[in-house]
Image (tube, rainbow, N blue to C red):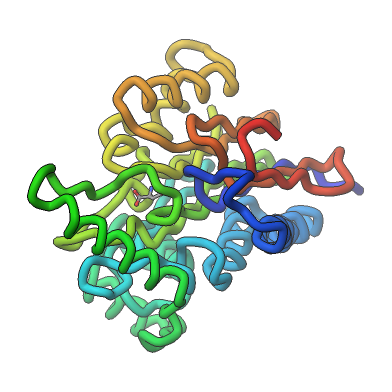
Length: 317
Ligand code: ASP
């Protein structure tokens, strides 16, 4: 019997401009997205859970240099990597989250482990790494997370910061795509269960153990079988103030709004507050929406009625 499913992924939203992207980069990203969503689709087609599909899709992007999560994570001001991630099961409302983890290969697996094997929701820093070690998760040394492209992005931001330091407040985020990104997946499985998973290296040049929206349940990630599953990307400080992912669910539950309207409304609120970003969202009927207020968002979607995933980058595609 054909399994009923629906799945969407994102690899970050931002100032992604056609004129600035080479053919090769365009192709590489589309291939990376295709590979990620296929990992999720394979699980759903075989009757697997939305939770496992989301985890598998996110792992592919964490293992790729292209995306700001896992291996491709951006650098902090001190030239280190600090990763955030969270996962949520729409059926049980169980969830797990981590922040400021430095050398765990796949942060999403640690978030899942916390959800399944601890009595907590969110572990951070060294404690989270200790928990990962206790459960035999894979670690990598710092060199694994070093990518020339991200290092160059940090140097560019530092140089710009030095130039403007005397005249204006230092910008922690200027909407430049090179500085941020996140990866995420939302899925509906054949049993009608929803899940969401999100993982991020945060923002280039972040300081003071800054934590973004990604590991904040309800901000960057949320799933509820009665409404929807949502994963966000964009300027985390705004997404956290608005609790964007939960907001989409709340509008559906309390105002009886459709997934599309509540998602569009959540992005409007983000714009009004001055934040940039996008979300991927899926409801219990398998409807998918992926609104953004940025020129682009790396993204892909697929349902059991389609033979191939739809992979997109630019907002007007
Ligand atoms: N939301 C991430 C953060 O603020 C970054 C991004 O998705 O662009 O950490």
